[in-house]
Image (tube, rainbow, N blue to C red; front, side, top):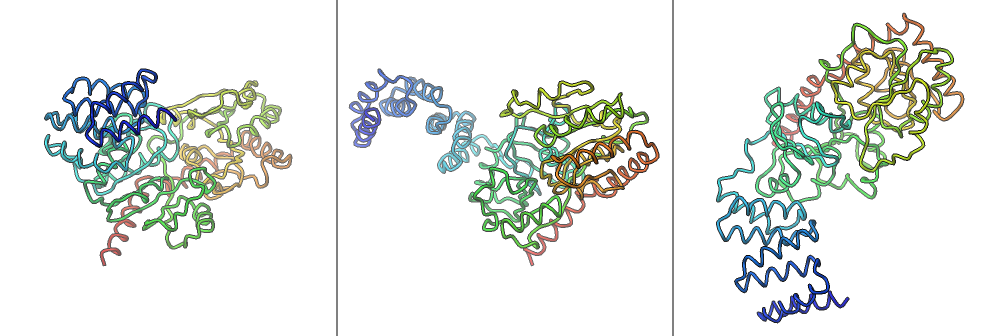
Length: 477
C-alpha cells in the first residue's frame, strides 16, 4: 500500500510540473523495489521530460523486462521513436502496445502515422475474405510439419480452396511465421486489430471466436463459423444471439440444432456446411494391414474405453494392433492414468503426426475404431479415414451418425459407451469386419464414394462462395 501511495503522489507531482520532486519519489521506491514496472515507466517518462533520453530508454527497457504484458512502456517507446524519425521502430513499438492492449486507442494512431511515414501498407493486397481465429499457434504450412487440431486444419483447407478459385483470402491467427502460403496471406492477431482500425473489412469469417463481434469494426458481412459444442468453457455466459452476426456456419445438423435451442437463435440464421478432406492426400492404399486398427483423436474422447475393450478384440484376433494417433496440448496432464493403460500388448502411440504421415497410416489400416464419449460436432478424423477407404466403427453420440453412414461407410453402435452391452456390440462389430472381407470391402468402397460426394473441399468452397454472394446481394438490395 505504501508503494501505491508513493507512486500516486509522484504521478500527482509530475502532473503539477514538479518533475524533480516526482523523480525523487520514484527513485526512492526503486531502491527497495527495483523491478516495479509502473514505477520504472513513470521514472522513464520524467527522465525524458528532463532531457535524459538515454536514461529514459534504459528505464523503459527495465519496465518491459519486469512485466512484458505492460503496454505503456511500448507505447512511450513508440512515441520516442516517432519523434526521432525512427519510423519502423515506432511502428513495431505501437504494434507491441496493441498486442498487449487492443483497446489502446492512441497506439492505433501512432501505428497509422509510423506506417504512413515509411510507406507501409497494412492492407497489402486487398482481400475479399478475412478469417479470424484464436487458439493455438499455426500458419499455412503447419500441417506439413506437425499435427494440428481439426478447426485449424479446416481453416487452412477452406482458405486454400477459396484462393484456388480466385478469392483473395487473408487469415489472422496466432501466427508463428507470417507469410503467404498456397496463395493465402497469414498474419498475427495483433495485425487484425490494426487492420480493423484502419480499414473497412470485406467479408469477415470468425472461426470459433466471438471476439471480433464485440470490438469496433466495419465489415460488409460478418460470419461466425462454429466448430464447438455449447459446453466449451469459452462460451460460458455468452449470448451470440445478441451479437452483430449476419450468418452462423454450422458443420452438422446436430450442432445447428443444439446451438439454436441453447442460445435461442432461429434456425434460419444458420448456414449448414460440412468439414472436408484433402482427397488427394487421403486415399486408399494398394496394400493394407488387415490386423491394424487406428484411433485418431484426443485421448479424453473415448480412448480409455477402447483400451479396456482391446484385449477382448485380441482374444478373437490375436495379431490385432491398435495404433493411437493423437497430439498434446500445453495443459495436458502427462500423469493421466490413460498413459498407463496404453502400456499393453499390441498398442502403439504416435504423437503429432503431420497430415501426410497420418494419411499414409490411415490408408493402410483395416478400421478406425472410435467408441466416442465426446459430443462430436463433425469429426474430421472420421472423414479422413473414410477418404482413405477405411471404414469407421463408432458410437452414435452427437453428430457421428451424420459423419459416418451406418452400413454404408462404417458401423455405428448405439447406447452408452460405458456399458457392457455397448462394449459387447462394439467388439463384435470390429472382429466381424476384421475377418469378413466381403463386408469390409463394401464399407470401404462406400466410405470413399460418400466422401467424394460430400466432403471435397473444392465442392465446399463453391458452396461457400455461392452463399456469401447471396448474403452480399441480400444486404445490398
